Amino acid sequence: MKKAVFISIAVIALAALVFCYFRKPSVFPVKLSPLATTTLNDSALSEIVTQITADYQSDCKRLLQQFDADLKRAVAPHFDQARNAVPETVGELSKFKACAKMCYKAAKDQLTGSNDFAPAFIEAIDEPIVQPGLRANAVADEMLKTLQLRLQERSMQYAADLASTCEMEKTQGASRNVAALEKCVTAIAQTTQELQRKTIIATLSVAMEAVFIRSTCSAVCALIAKPAAKIATTAGVSVTCAAADGPIPVGDAVSVVVTVAGLGWTIYDVYDVCRVMPEKLRTQMYQSLDEAKNALIAEAGGAAKKMTETHMTKAQKLNATLIKQLQ
Image 1 (tube, rainbow, N blue to C red):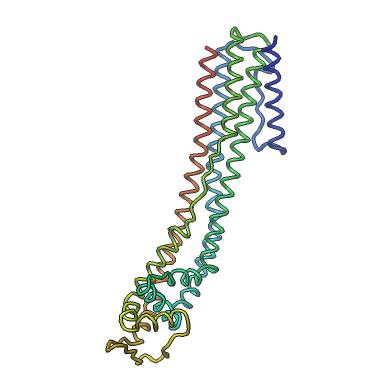
Image 2 (image 1 turned 180 degrees about the horizontal axis):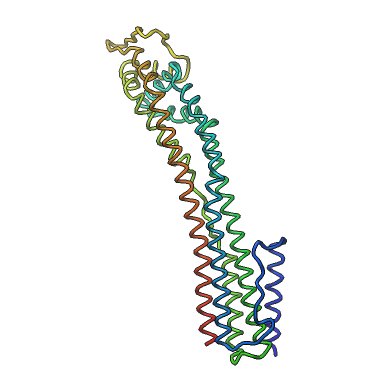
């Protein structure tokens, strides 16, 4: 008698938990159990349990498929915004004084071990290109959290369906193994608690930082390597640092030659960078944006798949446990 009361209380508590945790209508249709109108032997009950599990796993797969489709649509506008900003951003970076400033900062880094070039370059591309990519990353992160909630909601409904089915069969007295049904309900409650406690979501890495910024910085460094090396060789530490931190110490004339300690370099080296940078940097930025987008989709999709498979695996193990106990 005490066990029957305990099981009844457990079922009521589980239903109350479902109501409190999700205070809105479920997105999943309620399936009426055939046990509501008839009693079945343990073999038939096992088939019902297996079908409930199959329905649950089907819904989990559907949630994952919907996530994958929605993710691509959700992040695309942000990366499109970044791509649209590439021509103007590259145009600004390719101007003579902007190129010269980057050359001096790169030279200063070589001479003093400072880190002036990368922050200056990132600042130039941050608002028009990097920020849209970061917003796409935030969107993907929120979508993963929403998927987790939907999976938890469905797992609660799954547990409630199983518990209700087993409890109904026990109270109707059709089963020859009441103790097994009590173990079934206990196993259902334990599995549900594990899924609710488990933190599945891992923080997404920032694809824009990991892919786009690194590759574009490397591309610009390669373009300005020659004039930066000449500046570092000829201008000396004091002149280089002053130019890196303040006004450019040369005019705009291509014929100007800067000579320090008998060594010289011409402003043409910077103009040469200005000439080749637009096409090369545009190509690199477009390619890096595509790589960052694909990396974000792959990482978020992988996290969603792992999350979904965790729920499905738990359900499969629970189903096997219930079937064994009903045999």
